[in-house]
Structure formats: structure tokens, C-alpha cells
Image (cartoon, rainbow, N blue to C red; front, side, top):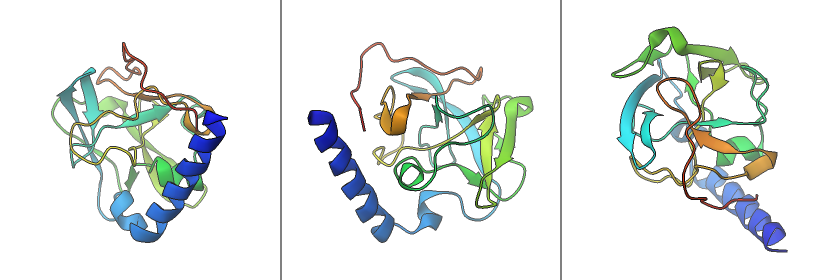
Length: 158
């Protein structure tokens, strides 16, 4: 029952966010996206140009995203218009991109599509770690290209 209520709340928040936050603010709309490494409560993780934690989705198939619609509103993909830029602590050889169904390019790292989390509202937050939204687990990603595992569960179940 709690899962159904939480899911309904998540969908309502997603719908509201989609109307209040233009897609251009949720993702990188112009230019090349950049990825850097930063220290966090989870250890070293990847972050976008605004210092927001980058996540991988367990349901993705190889470098292909399986997060669209309300999933992508809740977990915005990291979008780029060109080859992504490797910043401090990031291996340029692991950075890439994959074409989404809508024709936009999503940044990948070690063949994993990258996303931010709408619940992370400030630089350095990792509140999406370990959530099981939209049928799969979400984890921060390390500079080595592996998912980071939290030692304490953070909930989820949307």
C-alpha cells in the first residue's frame, strides 16, 4: 500500500515539475555536457557541470536508455549536443554518448547512460542512491565506471 501511495505522489510531483521546470533546465540543452569527479558521502562519484550527482539505471540495456516519459522527468538524462567533456578525475576514454528515441544524445560513462535525480536540489546531494524507481535500482557511478553502493538504504519503491 505504501508503495502505491509513494508511486502516486512521485507521479504527481513529476507532472508538476514537468509543468514548472522547462526541459532545458532539467537537462543540458545547448553545448557539450561535461562530467567531473567529486567527493561525496558515498566516496568519489561523477557529477555534471553543476555539481549534481550522476546516476546509472539498472534496467538500461547496454548503452541504451530504458528511461522515458515520466521516468525521464523524474530522472533527467544528461543530454549533450556534441562529444562530452571529461573534467578533473574523469577518464575521457570511458565517456561516450548514445542516441535516445527522441533523437537527442545522452552522455554515457563506461557504456552506462547517465542521469541526474530531480530530488537532488543542490550540489553534492546523493538522495537518489539506491532508490528502486521505475522498475530498477539507481546508483551513483564512480570515476572507475562502476556503480557506487551505499552502506545504508535510502528507500524508494516508485
